[in-house]
Figure 1 (cartoon, rainbow, N blue to C red):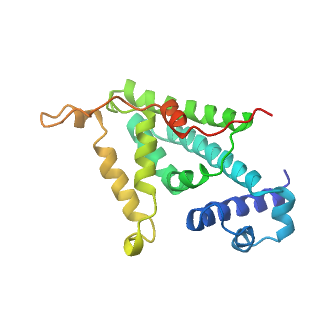
Figure 2: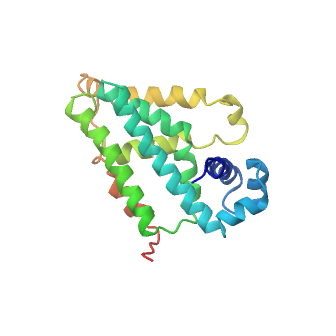
Length: 215
């Protein structure tokens, strides 16, 4: 892909993520065009319909999550610090907030399944390393971390969003939650075992139950 085409795609996808999060999947595509600062022909030439845009946006976010996990593992020697870095990077991508919107209109094809599987494997490796190092509670699965991120990164209702215009409160709350997931926290005499069993990524996929195409 040419450099200028790649830049246009990046602007469109970032604008689509924000617009869909703010206005839902029925938001006018012209609003995305204006937010991205590109011409209408640029968007419609690349994405003939809304479904194509949603699919590419989802694949792009998953690929960026995989990159975030790989970078966290490369930067941090401490396995739990790598998990922490990854969760914060996922929050900056607004993945947890926007995925609920994307699921409303997402049709999963074989290529998206491939990207999703590869991303999940990379993140699972990060989590397994933290378990093996004795730094992450054994009763925490990848599904737990994903759902935690989704819950905490959803937009605040009403005027409460004014409390966190720059995302600082979100990252504060993520750190507070992550501190409770360390193996050290689970060995304290006052610690209460988490009810239920650890959630896996497969549990989330099954629960979402999105239609799949193989063409």
